[in-house]
Length: 106
Image (cartoon, rainbow, N blue to C red; front, side):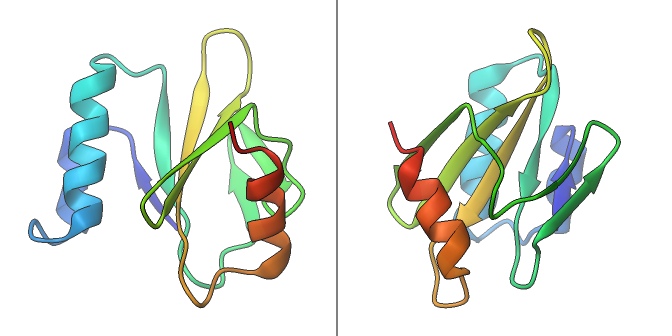
């Protein structure tokens, strides 16, 4: 799991990767962000963040959309703060998580 709270956090990714471009574009779109992005990686299941402790396979997302091979799940912790989960649709994606994301697709 990687956390992206500011553009400076993009240094966790190589600049020539699709994920780098997607997250950079998300920061441009949102401007000031009341929340942050969470990249889910292989083996990630339990979310242990200050704002949320949960099993991502059963998390009740407030919305999910899919662009290409990337799920973008949004979880609002309150009326002003949101966590945006970026989850690649790859071979390692857990079946339960995939089903949960598909159930919340808009």
